[in-house]
Image (cartoon, rainbow, N blue to C red; front, side, top):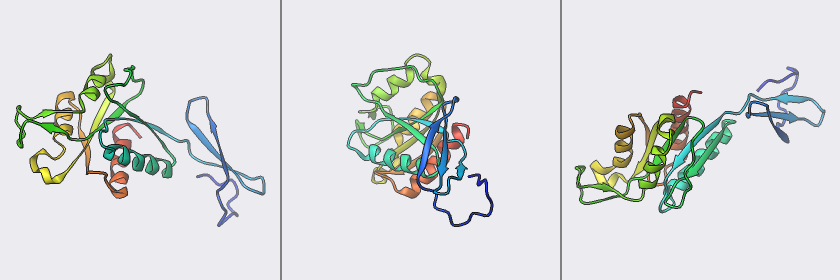
Length: 188
């Protein structure tokens, strides 16, 4: 954050006002009671697509969104499911997929994905696959080799890196770590 008067110390940075710049980024201007304006770095917007069934993934996306906001950034997250309208993505993105499988306890071809197929179809819609930069997986470590198997399969199928994983609803610490990975893979 740029302080235009270095003599100021211990100054409250609230309230603040958001202004969208011509580039589509947000510029935060913090207006102090004295009328002095502090300018903050531009906010970067990151794109995330995800599949959620029981709410665990949505809960983790909420944590990621809070981490992004605390870092002065924005996470544009969209849940993709069977009822989603497909659209062409316009910026690079990462996907977050939970692991739901049927067909056994192994990792072979008899074990198939369930519930995340709409996300795979969305990635394959138009040129969306060309903008995919990475995969984050979630699962339950109790399932051993099947832990984040869906994410591993997505990464292999779409030839992008597996950039992170977390268990069940994930922790804030995991969200911080994964948000840094998202930033690194989306170019910031």
